[in-house]
Image 1: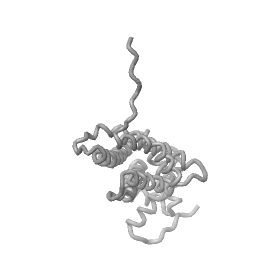
Image 2 (image 1 turned 45 degrees about the horizontal axis):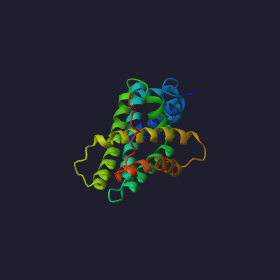
Image 3 (image 1 turned 180 degrees about the vertical axis):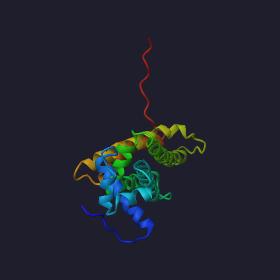
Image 4 (image 1 turned 120 degrees about the horizontal axis):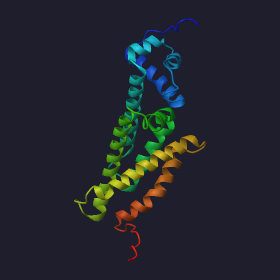
Length: 216
């Protein structure tokens, strides 16, 4: 097999081309099974060039995680318009999340399936997740404070709800990407129907309470 011939192009463009190939390969093959040879071939460059630009397989995977995490967070933030009512803000945020994960299934696989359980990469995904949870917490807490007319309502009152909502969104995105015919809008509507009934009651001051513990 002859050497791969490459056209001259700006370094930044070539690097993104390599990362696109890497995300696709890591997302579909997994970190351990993916090889630098495959990534180089898919990118249309030589393997030494991949090493020259991106150092090592570990460094390349870390760069992919950071790029995909940044893109996901930016998509969610861009989808939310603060002037909308609380339910519409949550709806638009969820729709942006599921649209991004549906349009970038390999990137989502890198974040959700490949990196989160593998050290030293898990810390990168944890940082992204914490940022999204903090963002969702603020969405909910602002709405709750307005609904209760209590500007001092502590974040801890809704932090667990935000954590649960993000966890449900992650699981549902993985399911939606693996289920043919499921659209981002359908996935977002499913989670809204699941979550907003409880959140709406909370906003109205009608949270669900567990039954009293029987006296012994």
